[in-house]
Length: 193
Ligand code: 5GP
Image (cartoon, rainbow, N blue to C red; front, side, top):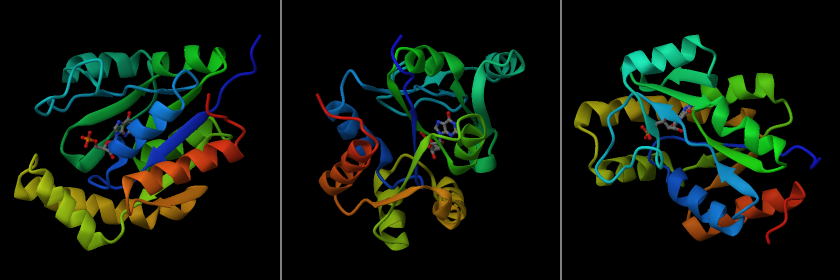
């Protein structure tokens, strides 16, 4: 039996560039570290694929799965009726195989994960500054003015809770943030192959 893997929880405000950094880290640890694909009820953005970026579910399907206990954690992020959740099926089988599983989730979801997995390694990705975060959110152009304002106010809430995380990584550049996370994984005895 392999020794069970661990969870790596990565959070950070919307627009901080988490997905890009996470993708780079996953490339470096291919075969050992796996991304958990969350379920969501929000609409796919242009270019997003079902089963790759998220499992896109209807409200009723999400609710049914929630009631059936299929989520390790789930939460309504941004208070606009969009639910996000980590399916157990994205986590359990891989931990059992001895793999690490990376969860890219919000701060409240992370807290729930820690209740079930107190040994999870937690990393918070910080923006270089709040004004830089705002600039990036606006430049992304995927959200309207109201949604951007909501994401900024949630970002402030998330930044205020950042100190709960074991590690803080500043996303000045993707390369440096990637390097910082890989170093954290090395400290945790996960070696690149
Ligand atoms: P987006 O809509 O920009 O893809 O994601 C919005 C927020 O939802 C991000 O902060 C992301 O980390 C969070 N999120 C994505 N999947 C999950 C999940 O499964 N659980 C929780 N709690 N948050 C999630």
